[in-house]
Image 1 (spheres, helix red, strand yellow):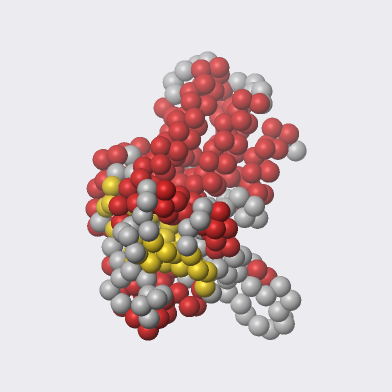
Image 2 (tube, helix red, strand yellow):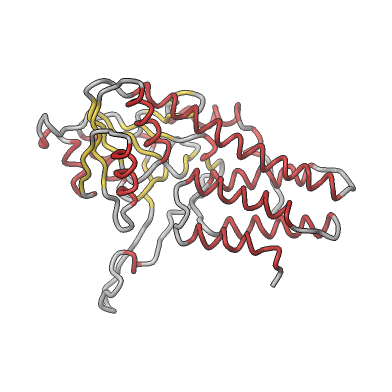
Length: 316
């Protein structure tokens, strides 16, 4: 086994096992692994380096099929690799290292601007429902709290892996008033049936992928929440940088091991464990991005203007 892939293999394992979770965290962790692997290892020549880097990228891509923020980072690095005309290995490595550093900085900057734009939708006395764990949503809520806004949050526990508990811990640590509920109760709290004490004014969730039509992919359960928001005329906002855009609209809905739901289920019981839902464009009020709050129908136009390299062909 090529020891140069040790960091890459560990990164693959950590992402696959959900030790590292969340689109932003996954992208940063993986791109940093590529960055460090270039600097740590030695390569015989340009061909050896290119083969290593392309193989490393393909390995990491397989860890999670629903993470375009990661795929776009890899695409950008491969684009730089392909465009480099230097005959010198040293300068080729430097250009690709710079590409990884540029993308990591881009993630940080874009994420910060998403959070800043997100607090615009939060009003005093709002009750906001959120689902799963989104670092951008949590940081938006923290910034809103620190800005003096008074609101409450209802968050779901998010079965089967309970990522909502992480959201709950972070809200608790930042003294944000909240209540955690089971996933199937979320539509009830969106409806007037829940009463004035609990009924939410709006829904704010993150996303793992944004399609060119303005549809999004997020944790399973998001679709039923979107249906309820549409039915009861509650705005549904998506928090996510355009670095999560899938310009090819071919992100699959990941199906995970049924044992996450029922580890010792009887043999003849069929259990489906879809990790994500697709939320159609027509259910989404706006997507909170680094370039402001964008209507779903305008996503493709903005991506072409701001990140034209996403539409470039990269090395396969």
